[in-house]
Every structure is written in structure tokens, then in C-alpha cells.
Length: 308
Image 1: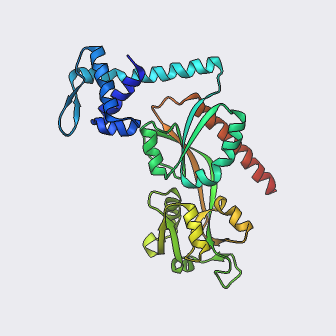
Image 2: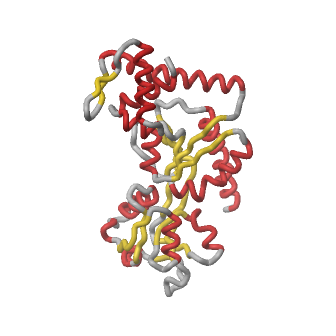
Image 3: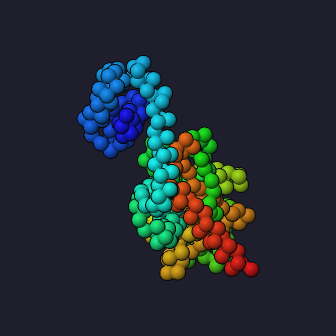
């Protein structure tokens, strides 16, 4: 049985829709129909009962579904093992990055990784953490780099880097030169936040809740969909925000933004790798994760040495 036809069959069966399968696989609906028809002809059986709203598996379809995922999994394992035997360090790698990681953290690592393995074709999709998890489950992303821990039995999540968040404001926003503000001052300030579903917003809310501050008590004046938009709004003196210290290095050097601490409160978070529990990782994805951990370990050791 053809590998691609089997993968198409699995998606149609899971989504119970030819049109939804077409969207996920980035092909036309007639192409999906043709692949299923060819598979049915090869097996001399009908795999789906079609209705106006959805499609359901026939008994033959159920039997095929019981084995199809294992066939695809074994195919992936075989391909991977052959690549390792041949030691061919090339192939495709699809990475899903949450905004802060994708825009300010991962470019440095990608440059080093690409220098080491120039034949690997890398595709990076920058979106929020919730979307990345969905893409992993739909097998459209090999590995995700996200900003918040998750509790999902279908996803394996491991931390790889620590990040600090700081309160940012345009220079001279406060009359005092003290770079520390109180929680009461924070509640009164016009606050610009990221969109719901953002890892940054989730972490900020977690620390505030632990300190007894609810989001409803804050003076939220604007909600924006990217860190760049947040920084631009803060530079324009539309309010203040809490964002990654890594995201404002350039603006601090140019004196466009100032970083402040919140008294008796620290905002730290971990960045995580994420991939499907039942997904056979490509050799390129395994290699990327391995090198990422090596590079972040060296970065931590360098920071520690500078602090002594």
C-alpha cells in the first residue's frame, strides 16, 4: 500500500471529512478523493460511508485504521534508520516557535545549526504556543519551541532555557530614577499586554496571581498580537508592558526603552521543546533538539562565569 495514500486515509478517518483533510494536507479536495478511491480499488473494498455532513468508516475501513498508523510508524522508523546508516545529514525540518523565542532567541541558534548542517532545509512558523501544539498534533510541525508548560498526554515537553521578564517603559516615564516600582504602582499604570493564548501573558498572570494580584485589578489599555507591536506601543508612550529581557537588548542600547523591576516580584520562565508522544521524530528534528541543548548549556555556563 502506498505510504502517502495511507497517511491521507488516516487524516480523513480522524477528521471524518474530505474537505478538512484537504486543508490539513494542503491539497485539493479532488486530490484527496482520488487517493482514497485508488486505495479502495487497490484493496477491492469500500473504506468510507459518505453522508452530506461527514464520512464514517466502513467495517473494512475500521480494520485498515487498526493497522494504518502502525504501518506509517514503521515506515517512518525504517526511513530514519536508513538515513542514520547512510549518515546523510540532510532532509527537512519544520519548527514551530512561539513569538518571543522565534523572534529573539532562536535566530542565533539557527545560524549555528545551519552552519553545522547546511544541507538541512529548515522551515520556521512563528505563532503562539496554543497554535504550535495543534500543529504538532496534526503532524505539520516536527518540533515546537514554546513559552509555557502544558499538561497534555499526547505531547512531550522538556525545558531547555530560562528567560527573565521585565517591566518596560519609555525613558523618563517615571519621575524617580529608581528602577524598581511597587505592585500598587503597577496596578495603576496603563498596561499593554499580549493576546490571550500567548505564553508571555500566561507567565505574567501566573506570577501576579501568586502575589495576590488578579488580571482584573490591572489597568489594561491595549492587547496586541506580537512583542514587536508591544514594544512599538510602549516606545510611543501608550503604556508600559512586561516582556522578555531578551527582546529589548537593541532598544536598551539605543535608549528607546528602560527596564524596571517590580518590588518583591520576579518574573522568570522556562522555554520548552515540544513534540508528539507517538510521533516518530525525524533524524533532523532529533539532531536539532540535541544541538539546541548543547548550545543552551554553553550559554548558561558563560552567563554563570560572567557573574563570578
